Amino acid sequence: PAGSAHPKTHLWDNGTDASDELIRVMQVRQKALARFGENNIREGRPYSTLEEPLVTTYLMHRYQTEAAAKVLGGLHYTYALRGDGQLITQIASAVEQRKALDALLATLQPAALTLPEPLLRLLPPAAGEFPRTREYFRSRTGLTFDPLAAAESAAGVTLGLILHPERAGRLIQYNARDPRNPGLGEVIDRIVAATWKRPAVEGLAAEVGRTVDSVALHQLMALSLDARASAQVRAIAMQKLEQLRAYASTQKTSTDPGRRAHFQYAEMRIRKLLEDPKPANVPRLPEPPPGMPIGCAN
Figure 1 (tube, rainbow, N blue to C red):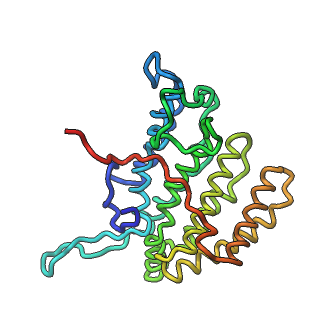
Figure 2: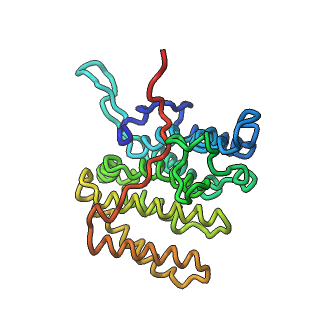
Figure 3: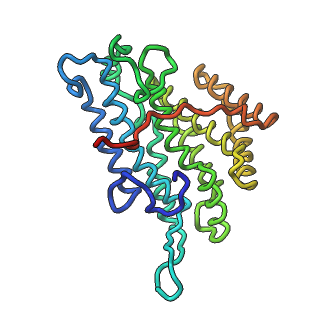
């Protein structure tokens, strides 16, 4: 499960260290996207079908991301028997957990999620006999390929795992048991620093960054209202939302109109939620395209 505790309970990942392998997979992914183009489809196929292999390439890190996320707030354990000498339980070390968090936050950077312009020029609307399917990215731009929706999907995977209510609860408890472990407040502060407070960039990367910021805000808002979460998880999430609202209010005078609108809208969303904390005010994000094997043919 996405919220499971053992750092080794995940599928479809590789490597002996989940965090190191996520870094390696992101490097492989970067090279794959850099060379991605018309050679990824057969001669005579519509260019629109390039999106099929693009989805799996763009999201090739999703399972290694899940593996690294399970180190954060992780608990090594066995179903030990009295007298058998096995490890019973051991919280993942603070070093392990922060290393995993570093690797996870790197997947949210605009440089990692912005598709190159030459590739975007090769992605027309779907050809008539080759309609879009659930295996494609959702689009908020009608018939055209939406690179921001792709970034939204990838960011949603990472942030949904980090801010899973069960993981958030363990972060609080394990920090209380040993203050050397990262707590939920620290993790949220790191997320905000890697998103809303990252250095400004330009062009499409700036819009990708704002998309990732919005996903981070959405997931934090969702956590603050999640009935599965403990009262303290929700309390800390609400506290961090108020801190983010205060920060956003200081950015509304930016000379960049896009950045100014971004922060004004964020402040409005947070204020509305704090005044009327209802789940209906936090609609679900679109699901990413399915990827895990869902069956096999005989």
